[in-house]
Image 1 (cartoon, helix red, strand yellow):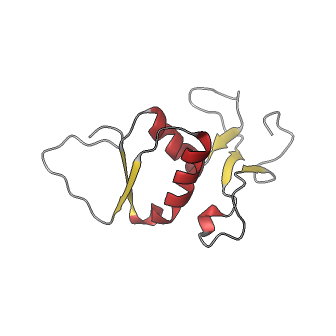
Image 2 (cartoon, one colour):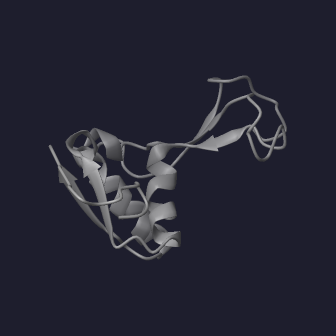
Length: 113
């Protein structure tokens, strides 16, 4: 895939979990996809890009995020988040979903609060 043998959307890399799982997000989610678009930092070196399901928990773990706050549409993805953290044996953040959140008198960034 990295060498460019496949076109975009022709191939992807999946996490083998369980195709019969009750949660559709656990049915072998896509981990990497092909995109032939230059990356701002790496240029044309890579054509494989991780999906949200693959990178979200890994980045949280690497950055020692203790509480990952997500909106409710990501609630269904919590199972795959914890599955990958356990499979990789990395730091496990707490995932909290919310519908509306107002913070006042705070400098807010996704990674700094």
